[in-house]
Length: 234
Image (cartoon, rainbow, N blue to C red; front, side, top):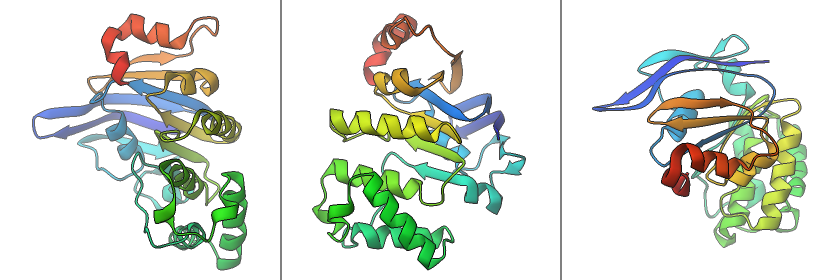
């Protein structure tokens, strides 16, 4: 099981957002850090097939990002995921499950499991527009897991969660990383510090650090030592 990103680039007019990035990701949690504008979200959108690259390629287990098999293996939580405010949480998950090709009986069973997992079972039939930001984020995490993905790409998955919820989802993401390739982008350094076995640091569209760090060393201090004030915006 392997995600292969080969010499991937994306240019928007005069700005190179992703600049010849090459990576091989295997099962486990890989954390992606970087300042605003470093190219993290663009890289993740390329890896999800939402954006077409200017150059380079993305493949998962030999399947190109444009293939149906790739999409069937993918779970994605964007930084701002779209939802229908008048849908209930259950209706939303059933709708997303249909888009992902799940049969209705399997979709109902999986939706119920995930609503329980993310702590929304008691409000499953309430409209999403009544949810807090943290509750909507939990629903976003649930929809990313509907198809039991082997490749999970999460852009700021703990945004809007309170500290207790954040710890809970760290544990969930760490568990998912045992059998899946997980790429996690966040501005919360402690999220990466606690669960990522591998850390990528991105700057000006390039990966400038790739590897583990000494667990006895504070990751935020490591990041600050590398990038100074930029860490405030990561």
